[in-house]
Length: 186
Image 1 (cartoon, rainbow, N blue to C red):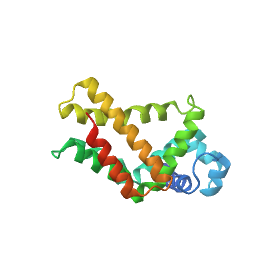
Image 2 (image 1 turned 120 degrees about the horizontal axis):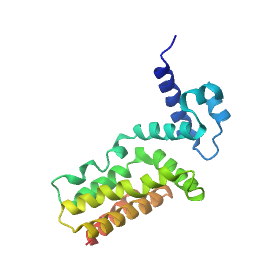
Image 3 (image 1 turned 90 degrees about the vertical axis):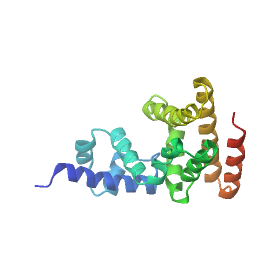
Image 4 (image 1 turned 45 degrees about the horizontal axis):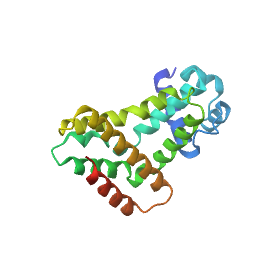
């Protein structure tokens, strides 16, 4: 008898492959089960619902992009804050992260149309990065309210630049825009 944990992980890995290849907007439980060589009943056994299956698949996809996952870890280093912010941007915009960024904006679009269904996603996207960037500004001497505003500005800048990157803008041009924008933050 196979270990249920390893079978769940095997299926999860296949689901993540499928999500990266196909996105999430048109996913059906039947389509996913076919794509991963399983059936609806087994997927529901391991993941309880289509929504939980997709959420687990998205989390598994995120793990596959370590440079993106750890992009904000260097915000509390010793280099000047604008340099640390730019390094975080370069990690976010790394070419190997483009498949994840496409998926991120796809899910964000779905969440914008159905915020109740994607509440956990929206709550996380709307606060996690801002909180971490604001903490870096506060550690650098900004008052808490100013740090919060600056954290929001930086994350909004990153989202806009990610969108431009996915739209085909030259990465070098976006790097220059980022450096100039971060240099103006006060």
